[in-house]
Amino acid sequence: MKIEILGTGCPKCKAATANAEAAAAQLGVAAEIVKVQDLAEIASRGVMMTPAVAIDGEIKAVGKVPTVDEIKSWLA
View 1 (cartoon, helix red, strand yellow):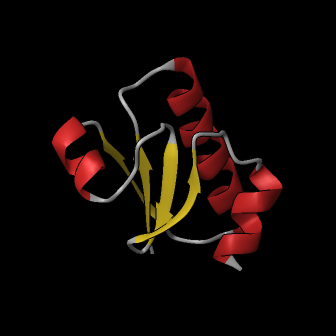
View 2 (cartoon, rainbow, N blue to C red):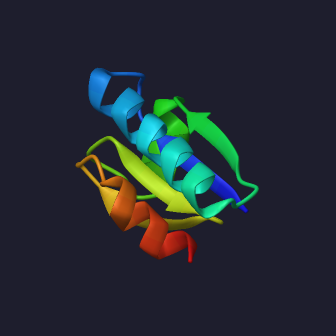
View 3 (cartoon, helix red, strand yellow):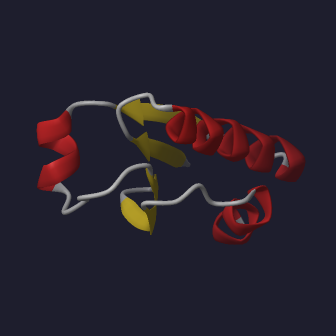
């Protein structure tokens, strides 16, 4: 499973990364967490606000920090 955090590395992006790591750990899911910081790549996916979270290429959240529970529901 691949979790991508799309954003420039701002505090909200870091919080989204931490929440994704926590969600995967709590579920015992082996997930690769990747940070996508290239603005052209982010825009090419139709994301205009960061942070955004994608699970296996599907955008799940844009412009907000999803909670650990939200991310867990996407991973389950």
